[in-house]
Image (cartoon, rainbow, N blue to C red; front, side):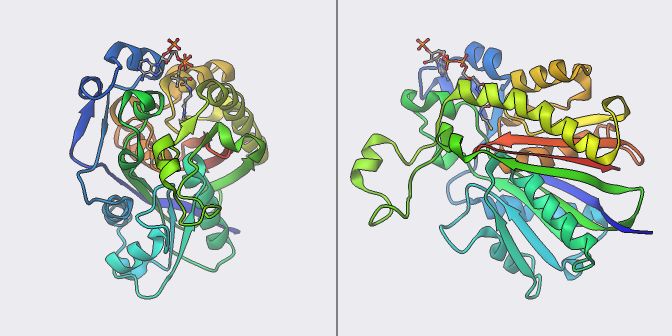
Length: 331
Ligand code: COA
């Protein structure tokens, strides 16, 4: 039997502070009705000062390990996906290694934004399938709130994002179970349609006063361009990974997409021709948590009884880069 890899444990963690749309109305010119209608988001979680994305990731990782029935001693590799690391360097992977007491295992950092978790999962799958590692901890975690322009100037971005973390334990298994196929894509020509320029190695001192005054340390987005590309790339990559694994859409129990926007999720369901309830969405309570959104959604979907042994599950992501990715799993 060929060795495959499968997710043996899942967990997520969000900071306790809930920020509703009405809370945002107090700091910028926005309103609950606009946010709900355009995005489906009602609330998100923000960290309190001093908490970094590694802290959230460590909590999610502890839960995923417990869920898998594993301890720190079992982990032989860590992959940490985040666009919002605690520091410029080193990456968050080594912080997790130290916090969880993982000996001197390797720690890899992934920066593919909203697609980061699927990119990281594909690396874990490859390492496990080649027989190199047997218990890989894959984490997606973000603290977006400290990097948002929480004023009217930044409202188009600020209302979308939230903080959180999700994690998965990836271990060997025998076919036909496990991760069956994945696909990874990017289109750097559109990088500046969704990006954050500063701090930048192109600038002496990495960030200048002019940059700060102009708000170039905050993420910028062409919302319509993102929407248009996302609603094309999601269905495209879902069809691609299903063709690669030899399945059809009607065999899929649940699609768990990156939670960018409820309207994007609804449009993807419509374009695929699947019932909306087969596309899992929990964005209304978390906002867009970037690399954390898929593992948070997958953990919740399983807790709700929507992901069971034998089910065919599709993960799909799209975001900054643009980068997008998909993955088929036999649970
Ligand atoms: N509250 C109230 N009004 C807002 C607002 C906010 N938070 N943000 C923008 N507006 C205003 C705009 O200023 C604009 O006003 P104007 O018509 O007076 O100029 C109006 O609302 C419409 O803005 P527009 O950008 O045209 O809205 P839209 O219909 O394109 O919706 C998004 C904006 C961001 C919701 C939509 O483009 C989208 O969902 N894009 C994808 C975003 C995404 O998922 N990004 C993450 C990808 S991983």
